[in-house]
Length: 109
Image (cartoon, rainbow, N blue to C red):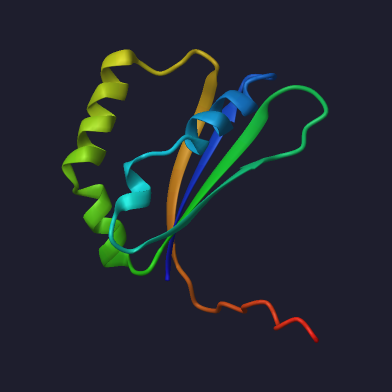
């Protein structure tokens, strides 16, 4: 399994805006090898907020297929034309090869 992680730091009050954007249906769900997508919002009392988007893929090759796909490239071109929203302070992107995966234990009957 292969994991892509995006960490987005936003101004206070904008974490849900980012979470909702990534929560909308999109082309990624239709890509071969896509497993799932999770959006996590870091609990913060005041100040900057952080959103982490985790996308799991069956393999690195499946992720590369998404990265090189026309729909993904066009989406980024469209975003570049619109410009980065002013509420985004910083963002980072990392990828990981999953070394250990522990599934949940079956429920006792």
